[in-house]
Image 1 (spheres, rainbow over the protein chains, first blue to last red):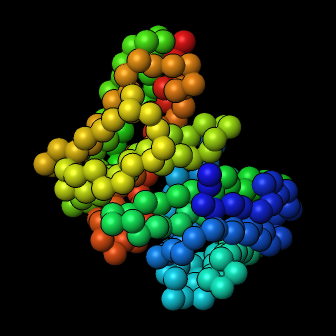
Image 2: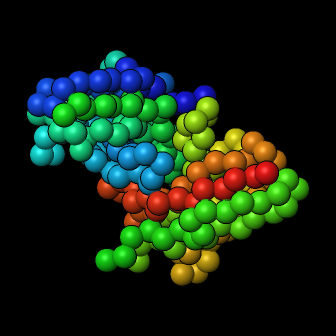
Amino acid sequence: SQQGEEDPQALSIQEGENATMNCSYKTSINNLQWYRQNSGRGLVHLILIRSNEREKHSGRLRVTLDTSKKSSSLLITASRAADTASYFCATDLNTGGFKTIFGAGTRLFVKA
Amino acid sequence: KAGVTQTPRYLIKTRGQQVTLSCSPISGHRSVSWYQQTPGQGLQFLFEYFSETQRNKGNFPGRFSGRQFSNSRSEMNVSTLELGDSALYLCASSPGGDRAGYTFGSGTRLTVV
């Protein structure tokens, strides 16, 4: 089963609006990562937040992590049509080696 | 620097055949992971290699295997292909240890007919 689950499954917004995606996970983690995937292509790493961090920023991206609730959120501010993609959260399990488990993703569509 | 290179990009195979996919990680990256992506199951972890050793394995049958060479290049092999093996296979590399996330290749799209 998936370790991370994103919510919502799909999101459609107008250009300029903010987009918020949520991720919940089940077990303790070392860190949580967010990735973007454009249709049928490889994933692009966006941001990594460690388990002892609560918030992180990168350009128009803001990620929060609440380990007590086992949840994270990704906020994209002032969205652009080019932000249209699927967004995945991924959690790193320290299993004596690293095992990164991806959620099912949120499909974001930004209308111009 | 060069990214993660996966070859071939597209592949069509017949049921029962076997296939080998290749992944060249970013220079200096010692950890290579493989994922299978399908519309129904999403991204499923296959295995992770570090310095030629498999450190983790996902819940896939023994038909799926992999290896890593001393130059960190990795291959995965699927034997006795089934229709359900049709998927995008993604390779990702990282330096290993305290990492800053994966760098993914563009994937190999395998179609089994």
